[in-house]
Image (cartoon, rainbow, N blue to C red; front, side):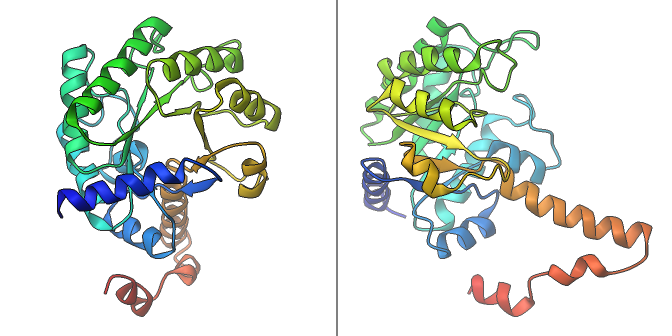
Length: 276
């Protein structure tokens, strides 16, 4: 793959964020990336949790090292000719110089975008302070700019996930700071109520907002678009759907000695055609 192909994907990815709303699903290996691209999704995003589960590891910040993550991101980038956004957790380095180096290495995989989050503290208080987290966004922005590549930076506020007493107000405060620090897209995983999504979108305009949908909450893509959401991801949800089907079928086989769980299996012909 040539640099010009990376550049063309990056142009497409930025354009997707200029108007409307799109779904960016999360494959966890080359096969799922190919399948999703062939379904017509205009872009893909990696999932650190989905990748960790595929390696027999839990979804924790220390479960995967940066070398494994970069290799996985490159695999997804090379699997299909669509833009890819990398779930880069907190950058895999606490020090700012190491963060900058890792961001540059992530850009070099050919991604069209990458996201970093603000949880890198100790187990009792994982959320970084707003000034420290915003400085990490600035460092990531500078590393991308110094690469000369047009890669979108997404900044995540993790306060909904870590039990903050007022997660919406805190998410707005954090994401406004991250936008000021150079983020192109902002993201508060865990926000789910329609009124909260609207408040978040309004608070950070004109910066694009990504919303994570990790379960069937009843909301639709069309409704999220009406709320002003620009991008919708599903995180580890598709991988958990696959795991759910696998565990259910295997459990039936182990405990009941019956094969009913195999009824929903894709056929050989279907899969061979998908990957031909």
